[in-house]
Length: 585
Image (cartoon, rainbow, N blue to C red):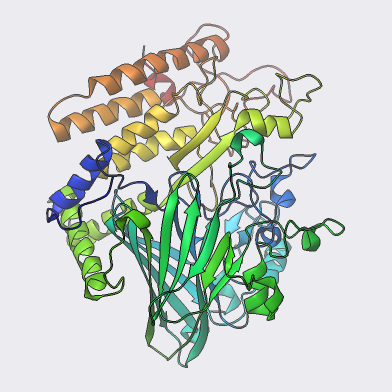
């Protein structure tokens, strides 16, 4: 629905509340665009097509810049639509790094002396539940990023030693880094203003290449399953624009037509979001002359033949080349607008920065309305940023169990299948916005974590919180036998049964806010939770004692043995856990 930009928007907390109501009632899709981009898609189970199930080493960080993903996308301070057809994120280069900084770097489970660990400094500063205003900070060093050093030194340390962090390398000495602030403000549901501010904290002027990147998730290549393959390949193209503005158009068969306006006469670089087979798999040919790493190779290596001179493709970026003085700030402004919401006004006129001020004021008022009056100003800031972190941690999660198992020759519905990870979850079709434990370290949902996530989320967005609880109980998530999916490493693992308790908590919170109960929510969750409870009784209570067995009960995942498997010494373990009493009786 096209927003009426001439209609006055209610002010103060009512403005954000009105947006949430309009989205709930399908009057305006304020949540269609949000921070739904993962911060690490590489090294995930969904992208693992290895013979031995070694997800971390099958799709590495080094591969990520050159290899198209199958099931999602990642980036820094990124956004996407709620089906992740189109993505936008920030890429950077300091003139010294060996590669563009397009995604966060960290150690894999085997590289870190304490397991996987992101080695970057970034902060979720602000967010509202409609995502009408968002702010993110990334600290980008001016010296070459020490990729090899972090891997080598951490690999030399024992589990008893401290981790070797990015700060320990000395790369931030003398404050030689940029604070890169990325802000988003929605003028309407599909008119998104972007303001990127890079502040040089160092003692001298420094070079910075800023490449705000827009691209399509690859759903057109021949290796995409036919049931998930797009009917046509989308396209980004540069078009003529008034002096002082560079513009590209977005055309997607499902998403529609958009324009990305970039302030300044800045060159636009185009390539394809397709795998560079020639780099990664010698002997295999690329789908086109322009691959996913084409912009990287053009900027970092100066290879002009790696970007498309025809100014079109499925991945593009304006190339801002800045010199930022000591203590100074350079600002880049962009605007992503659906064509049906365009007008003839200057996209970067006086109203641009005024809208940011307005959305910030509305966010201030909204958070004042949900903050208990007894808390101090400092505690209120902590609460607000914590909730912003929860809102930034939403992610589009895509997993088609039937197709994924087919591709691994492990679908039990087909002859000749072999037992592999998640074989019994062929019914699953996950294609939703889900709250993640962490979009780098755990960029996949965990069912019992999600139950706890809904509690703070209910403070700012009760409808989203209830929707998350109902999500795990849908027939395309919940196993036909009643088990909830745990997490992608092993959907069949056993998570503590906390969902009944969380559902009741949400019910009481919602009733306190609205003054009436959402009986439809109670009915839907209760019926499915009874099915889940039956699974516990039938599968995890072999002696009928109402003492459940296995899984994460007790010491979470740091127990000395796997409680979902037979004990190495024989016998069995019985334990009483308080979470066992949280199921409906």
